[in-house]
Image (cartoon, rainbow, N blue to C red):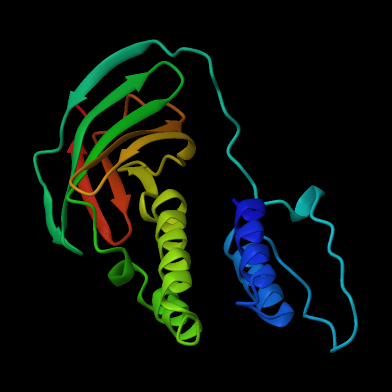
Length: 210
């Protein structure tokens, strides 16, 4: 994503639509948005090279590709969160496996992304005020896609006995009318738990463990 974004900026600069300072500023914004921590920009006339490696890399959950054994399946949540930034959110099912827990979810229609992250999109619009309309539309679309893929569909799982669940995998299908997915957490649900709580931003849905 970062290399593609940098290539688009380089194309803008090649066409004379962006200065070197603007290109560097936008590259910095995207690098930070993707999770890296950068030092302060150098003074004018000084070049700066940053090597991103080791502990500086954004952490990724370790993928576990082994096929789990499903011990039992819970039906969808009895409650539905409606009118959350223009969408409805529900749990459609939970698979309690031998080594993990898989929660299936549905959001319809997709939420109003700018209203979910008003400060980020206000800053983006401020940056685009001096950019040509066609370029602003392209950058706005890329920002939207980045938020859909990285920030909109982020979930946490908890239960009534305080189990610490770690998100390890997320498969999703996103489009304007409906978004669906399955998010995997470790460990499996303990036998002593009686309910699960799936959190999506400020929304919580509870499902009984039966």
